[in-house]
Length: 367
Image 1 (cartoon, rainbow, N blue to C red):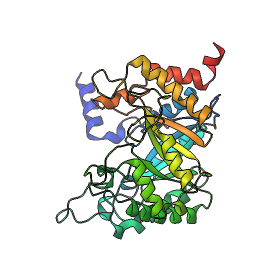
Image 2 (spheres, one colour):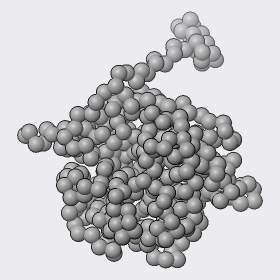
Image 3 (cartoon, rainbow, N blue to C red):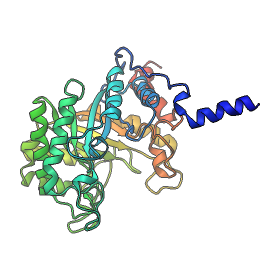
């Protein structure tokens, strides 16, 4: 017994003596087998530490029949300490494993490292706070990201839900300010890869009126983006299309948040001469929390999710992808957010995963 205690003590004191973790190999390229290539999912690997879990998540995405993933690559994680000092290891792992599984990545870029924000002793800010002075720094990060993954990532989203005050650093939302950011990021991205597809928007569907401290109605915000000259600075529009308690076939209305609100967004694009630009739905879905006011029953969630993919594919030829929120969280969220997930933190597939897999792979058509 004393010998085993001594060995345990050595391992604790000298961790290098412990067996190394097995190397995770991306493996040969795979191909997604799908009958519905519009099917996508928003993965949430940003805070996933263990590489084997990144690999397993993306394997399950492929096995579900999804061809698209939306993944967040935070500027604050990749360039955390100072300008020009990059930490690419986590992003490299996500990109390499997604490529090995045959998945097309839509990379969402955003957040701000501390060094690119005001001095916290004089002006406390959140990691969504980007002032005009540091827009060129964000552009430099976008350029570096696009250059590094030129052969692997060909879609990027610039920022997330800038029509919400929280996502704009708890400042009054500013469509013209977002267009200034978009223009700088688009130019930097195209300099690294002229063929990169730059997605704008990712606007939160909301009914907030002018002057609200929380944000601004997404339809009004998009109209103001166009007035500020946004059309010249993006190739496609990212749209968030949550269904809440409504079915995916429920008609749209300017005073309603539902899946088909996307059609009202599309009308604004067409009115502003952008009918040729596609839409990518980069967040959408339903929630089946038993006590949340915006949730539906579990069976409804399953049916609505599959029906939404089918509706978009059938009626929206201008839509390239529908990426539901969210595939899996690395750890329990301890609230209603867990009920958006398709797979548990322990990789147990939920009913919605099984139903989407049957739809996407054509099993539902066969049986």
